[in-house]
Length: 358
Image (tube, rainbow, N blue to C red; front, side):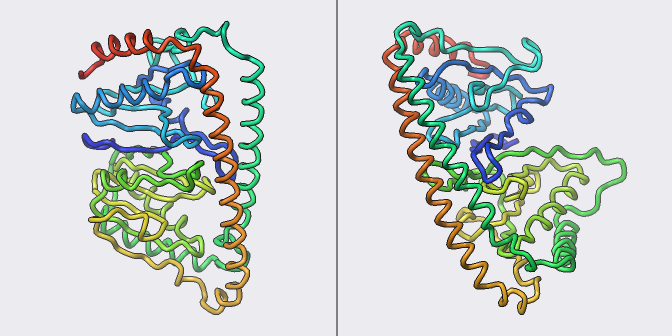
């Protein structure tokens, strides 16, 4: 997946369409084996995942770090492509279990190091309820922000504009990938979030782009035509037998933010120049010039107003997420005094000594 490098993604996020999770399809392929972590907040799951990831890197393995959108400093999982195995936090809101215990995965319960009888359960319930309320408020603001997306302005894009975007995409595909060979086995399409709206604002992982791509097609998406372009690119690359990373838009996940084709070192991103890492060769594709300029001028005031309101809604969503994260930190603090971290550290040290590849 990442040719010996370290990459970072989100597997789930709060979006304008609600909580949007990709972890089940990521863990599903039968050739992958995952150790599913269990345990409460503050029980050391993220610390364990960080140590496992660091051990893999020290052993020379490629590492995919899967960050938590609720707290980007924490991890929800790590995956080692060469070993086709990894570790994942299987607790709420991304609850998951091995499809076939022992064949596709196993459990590791860090909650066994917690003295649950000493927990302040009333405090836990109160903090959890308040945290959920702030997340609900964040969801409402994100839903409003998605509804105000200027790219969906009625009357902005006509069918002929979409067809023009598709023609441009087909021309680029012919140059980058050629034609699919007869009998070519289709490539795999993996869906992962390259960015998310978090308690720290919008976070994007440019180092992941740099790890996969030497060249980047930057698509203007002021009129919403990037989705047409990226859909053609994704399908064509897969038909050519190439594995593809398809990254949903963090606000409207039915749209695509980026398509990366690591084996060809090329990516396609709907974004701004600030999203592209330094050192990459860029080619700018102006899709926003395709709709009729007279039509665009007539709608400009409406689009600018919607964009201003959307920015306010996004800022409010981030503030609600920040409050939710503060309460989650308080929740973790309730659990920590009841944890035997010395025993957990000893267990982790012993576990890593037998870790494959180390």
